[in-house]
Image (spheres, rainbow, N blue to C red):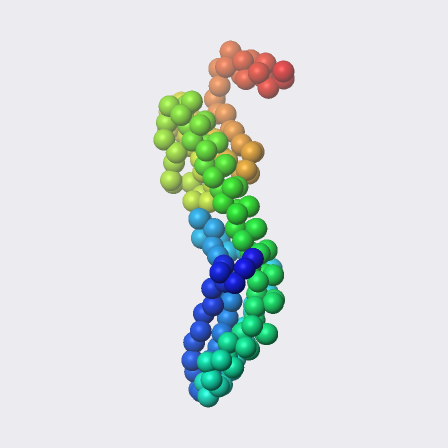
Length: 151
């Protein structure tokens, strides 16, 4: 990571500046995990040049290292989220239904077939993992599902 990628948050209280590194968030609002909080405080009485030196010396080395890890984690999370979304969209298109918003909001899912009490349920549990619950299949439908899964 370079300085151009850095974003600092600066606040003032009781004659001191609090300077913290800011980390990016994924498209679904998550931030990286196990990241070091890189924060310093300096007196507001220091000149801008001295504050800049303090940032260079005390913030940027650790923050840029953590920012690189945070960016890697966010990119990984975005890829995970996009792949899950594409997978469940493809399957809902095959089923001819819309993706439901009433399930767990973090787990893309849909229901199809049957009546209200007996519907098949499809959830995207992982990046490339689908959970399917099939309810009240006919013997012929069950035979076809088992045949496909067996091969």
